[in-house]
Length: 370
Ligand SMILES: Cc1ncc(COP(=O)(O)O)c(C=O)c1O
Image 1 (spheres, rainbow, N blue to C red):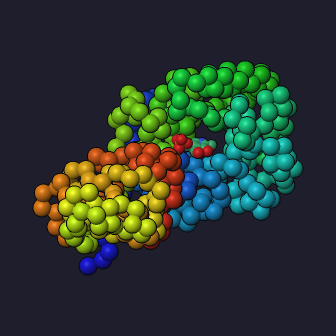
Image 2: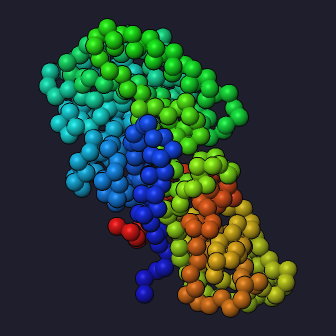
Image 3: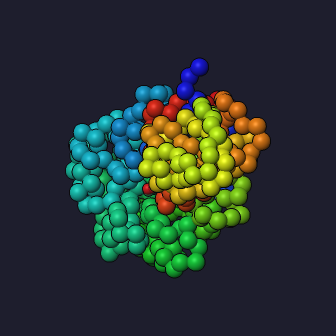
């Protein structure tokens, strides 16, 4: 029998979540964001599962885009950080990749390239996140440079990214929306003069689910496709998401320990009552965070049991004293249906995005619902 640690990936749930992203924003199209190996779920499998519905996929870099092309994905693929060299630009043109550009050098790389296949370009605007994007004051000039170039296809997409879309009460998102709208108005005047169309894109998952004014020509949902809830609390649309990854393993050892006996490295947890301890095949080398706080839950027989002692590289110990009849080989859920990755991330002082995206190759992905 193989080691029982595995990440079950429910592709029906992935499709359900993609459809939800489309349903909540019926006037937009949704780019399916599958960067970082589809947030750890397997980019090729995720893209294949969505290829009948998603018009475009979004990745971070050309290597991720080529992986999808080589697997037979034919849609346009948006490079969210654009291209890093003239060679990458040539590949992007040849492969029909779309490029997001966020500074003058990237833009001039396109406009000064030899004429040839016209590229679909997304012009990234810094509306306040201050990470990537051209400044609002330079946007009209840079838009014109692109729009007047034969190397650029009609329908340039003005895009920006939200810093705080997951925090509804904070003022940043309305400010970003306003900046976006003001810059769009100025750019649209130039587009009209040149007889061109402008498309728009502002929403990530949080923007798609919660911010009506962020829903534009193109939304860019990522985390929500995998069933993650970016808000950290109940939200009308997020409550309808289905977890895609079930991280599972099984009990590989069981023992009774007496009061005062301690468990695991550093003897950090000691029994205060006669206890039954289950050891499971899962550790930080399987992507489970070592830093989870004491009492972090797992599910056994659908019931919660607590992690006790330190998470080691390949194993974790669980207090199953209060659970009836736990046996060797019994299945254990680390996160997924009934125990959200967001809750476990919270116990580790991080976000579910990180836990999913860091899922290592050693954990076999088992695909359901192909
Ligand atoms: C530019 C851009 N768009 C969209 C996304 C998807 O965001 P989310 O996973 O929050 O939906 C990301 C993710 O970081 C991004 O960088």
